[in-house]
Amino acid sequence: MRRNGNIIKRSVGWFSVFLCVGLFMLGVFMVGQPSGAQSMEASDTLSVPADPISFQQGPGSAIASSYCLICHSAEYIYTQPPHSHERWTEIIKKMKHTFGCPIPDEHISPLAEYLVSQNTIQPIPEAKKFTGLAHIPTRESGSPEKGKAIYNTYCLNCHGQTGKGDGPIGQALIPPAADLTATGNKSDTILLNTIRNGRPGTAMPSWKSDLSKQEMEDILAYIRNLTKS
Ligand code: HEC
Ligand code: HEC
Image 1 (tube, helix red, strand yellow):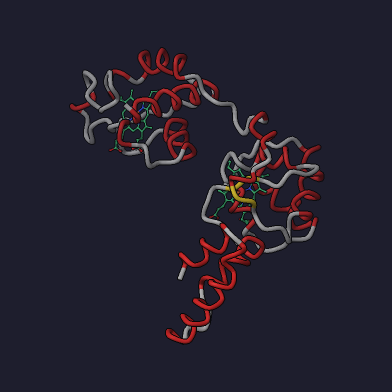
Image 2 (tube, protein in one colour):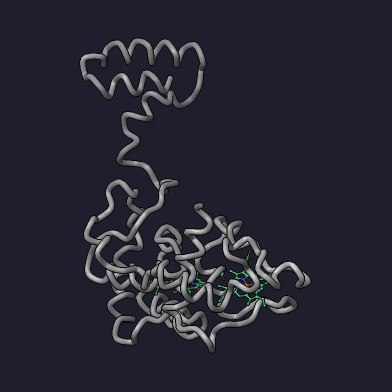
């Protein structure tokens, strides 16, 4: 039945054919909703697409992209229940003070206003993404080249040349140093958190007093490259 829906999209002339086939199918299967008919109207009525999505452009959207995408997907924000300006303000302040979202105070009110304006809007699919967003850094991105140098100084002894956890002392540890090439399915936030705070109960040290945020981002970019190769 889906095939019929695609044919009709290509040519309006097929409409009558579709109608006949559609009615026929409906009769045969006695299904409440023929999917062919659905796909004709679907584009306007889709709710939350599975694709990655971004913030809809508008006053304040750049703030949301800069400070909320550090930890959340835009979809996560769009699928929140509608909130008042006061409630969004509270949430943003909680993100700032409890979770460390680096949003400056003067951006809180404009962002709350933006989020209220998005309360009833569905997320937009990646394909329709406002291309200008690409120029707004959602986070300081890391340099794998710089990351490599830092990695070789601080991490190689345990995690090894290729990141597999086979550095000179990596395998002797209990538990052994982690195989960083196997971290592809872990989020940036989680890995950065482990680098920043270490892993209690293992030899993985906390790096927060030795490395800057940017240096950790650089190492992360390098680790991501190791994962790919
Ligand atoms: C540093 C990470 C971080 C940043 C940045 C961040 N959040 Fe959160 N956010 C969290 C965590 C952690 C939770 C709690 C998730 C849970 O309880 O499961 C959360 C939860 C939420 C919730 C759920 C409701 C609630 O009160 O717990 C909303 C809504 C939310 N964030 C919105 C935002 C918005 C809007 C921004 C941008 C200003 C933002 N977040 C930035 C970490 C972050
Ligand atoms: C003294 C040894 C040692 C050093 C030095 C070290 N690590 Fe680790 N690392 C470990 C151990 C041990 C683990 C935890 C293994 C486990 O949990 O089973 C670990 C875990 C990790 C993880 C988590 C991997 C995962 O799968 O969640 C990351 C990321 C990581 N290290 C990055 C680094 C980076 C980046 C550096 C350098 C800045 C570094 N480590 C330096 C020993 C070390």
